[in-house]
Length: 298
Image (cartoon, rainbow, N blue to C red; front, side, top):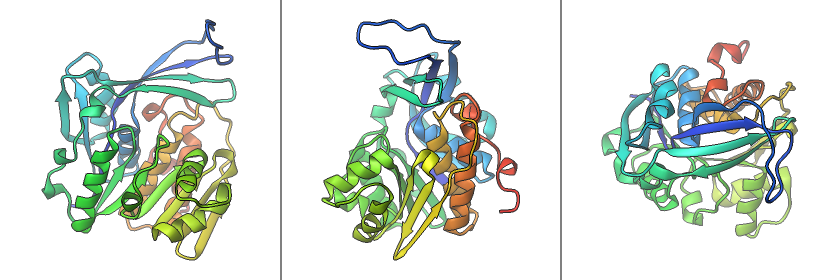
C-alpha cells in the first residue's frame, strides 16, 4: 500500500521560552514550560499524516512514563505505530529554549533512539509506492543499511540530514531527495570539497550526487535543485512564535505531497506554507497544521 514510511526518532520535548540564552554558570528565569511530543522522525510522521496520507512509524521508546505522551499525538492522528519497539533505555528527550524572536536552541538525549536498527523495518514494508523518510537522530550506520535495502527494492528515499552530520558519499548518492537547512548544506558541501555558499551550493551538490537537493533558509525561502533546474520560492511571511517543528513539518508535508502524486515544485510550495504556519504556534507536533490550512488553490 502506498504510504510514507518514517524511520527515525521519537522524543518528548520540554520547551521553555527564555528572554535570552544564559552564559556559563548563569540561571535565567523562563516562561511557562510546554511538554510536548517531538523527535524529528515522529514530527515528520505526524506532519505527513495530517497531510492526509497513510504513515507508518518505525522507532523506539523506553519502558517508562515518557513513552505514552511521546506517542500520544501520533496515536491520535492515526499513524501506524506497529513498528515502534520498546527499549531498555529511556525514551528520547529534548530540552528546547525558545528566544523572543522565535528561534530555538535544542539539546537532545537520544535514549531509546540509539537502539533503533535497520532490521526493525521488515522487507514487506519496502515496496514500490512507498516513500521512506529518514533523519539523523538515530545511528547513521543504520540509516546507511536501510537506504541500501530501500534502493534495491525500488523505494524512494528522502534523507533529512539533520542534525548536521555527513554520511558517506555513497549513502548520499543513494537518496532521491536530500533535505537540508543552511548549516547542514554547508557542512555536507565542505566535506565534499564544493566551493561556494548558501543557495549557490544546491545545484553543484545535486549534480555531484545525482539527487534532488532541497535547502531551506528560514526567512530566506527554499531552493530546490534537480538536474539542471533550480527552483527558488520565497518564505511565507508570518509572525514567528516558535520555529521548533518547522523543518520537520516541511519534510513530512513534502513527502506526503510526493506520495499523493503532486509534482515536486507544488509539493515544495505546500511544504513551505505548512512550515510557516507551524512557526506561528508553540510546540512541534502540537503546532502542525492540517492539509486544508495550507493547500487551498494548490
